Image (cartoon, rainbow, N blue to C red; front, side, top):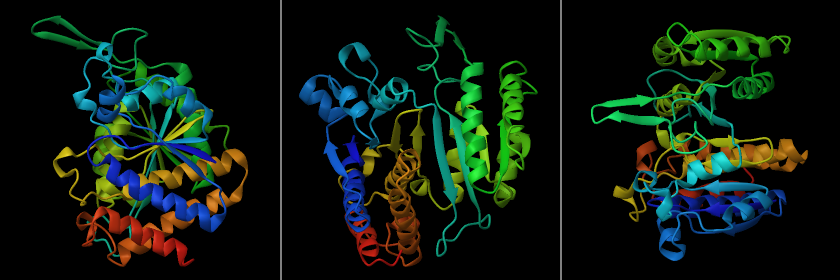
Length: 355
């Protein structure tokens, strides 16, 4: 398996370093023969090549078996004509990564206020209320006058059908429960179509239990009783907000793994940002990117039929759980280690063959 790693900005190089160390350890233990190829992206690439995404990088990523993208300073990048391209948007769009898969679960040893749960948010990734994903040229947030802004949302049958199918297939591999989150009582046409397509798609999966909840009510339900949910599917912005909430309910946004999946490609990406205020201080939690990398290995296992990649993914997830329970983690999740030492703790757990 050949994986391209793009460390990114801020804390990106630190957590990407910890993640690649864990990946190498997993590759050695499970005989994965992973080849890692690293390239700059974001500010470093802008300084070296005049663009946050250098020419030819897309072709390199397309030829690889997977991509690990560290957090980048997306808020800094405002003028694409000057090379300030949002790397996350760039790869999601050009690789057509239509599904953002965001697991969230609780961990023994890490206190939480809502009880144990294990769920996955499946978020449509290519349209919705995101101004950079709806138009062939320009964006869909329009300044009509100095005092009036109109933001357009695009919802298409094609995108609804494929995200619904992805969510149903995942639910069938888990506990066979699917919750559709929407606002069809207000967004009657767009969310109405999304809801109906999800219901129609689910009918092809015998034994799949389906319910639907309005997004505002869902925010209350998932806080009150998160263990009732298994797989949750929603449109882009609702899913974005909900997946951050469920990750935080698990103990920290730093525990939120994230995989962007398309038909032919997948990109592991931390659920959080580049956190420039703590960059270089060796305090950032690397678990989100490590868990995202594990999701990438599991995706490759399903795609290739090679079970050892799935075994490696489960071992990495178990190692993270063991590290948290043993206090071998960063301060935000109850430990006292730095970024590098936390990554090394996962390596040592993996190499001890205890997971």
